Image (tube, rainbow, N blue to C red):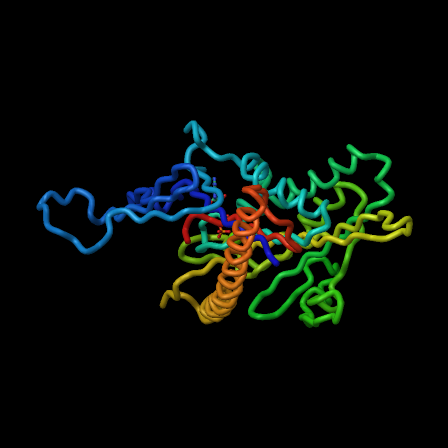
Length: 328
Ligand code: ADP
Ligand code: MG
């Protein structure tokens, strides 16, 4: 059973949008995102138009990150306090957690997941949080283990972003299914880390190895899906016998969806079609998970009504959150 949460984040207009005198067509109010059809602005002829003037969408979280001077501006830290902290608490309870950013090229996925040196994003904050909680419980320091791997999927091929040598780096890896542990990437390097600095160094090394290219919307667009995996193993006692709880945190920075442009060279078009193909597949998976989650929450509300209105949510085997860019 999966617990799926969806967030949306609105970023500032970029230089090109400002030069084109672009206007923001969205507003955020609590969990509601309103999309305004700006083409209908200024029409005073009173004509009935079949197009909706305002469309409303409801999310688990809505972040307005347009201007830091505004009172309801959502900073990287605020996004972390909601999404990052629940990733960490899910993992410490032994669940597998996946957090990913989905959206058009240039919508702010990499900014949200990785951030910039001045304004770090969710992935480095989650690494910091993981080791901070270990400092809080020094007795348990030796009883847990953190292993990191980092891969990218580029043109349907899986590449290890942390394999070191140039030759090896380009080799594509195979995805296999283990009868007990589920899907895994064969020969993907795993790196044991014992402090936050080591984790951050691996993150930086992998980011530097990612494939980026200039596109219409973004001059350093990520052309691959990147998955940063933290395997968190906690040693504990079960019925007085030593046992281990293994949680996987998958932090995914997806490549952006983008319309094909006839100015693009063949490489950009091939990348774009592979990106769109994989995003469509992911969309089908998310819909199925969301449907299951809706079904389980309606079962839960029936159960809780039966047990005299206890409103708490049911525990799940894996939770998934999505922090997305504003472009859709
Ligand atoms: P994507 O990964 O979705 O293609 P990026 O995250 O690289 O897009 O964002 C595109 C540009 O917009 C980058 O220069 C980034 O720093 C900037 N940007 C994105 N989101 C924000 C935000 N919330 N606040 C400030 N700058 C942002
Ligand atoms: Mg990106």
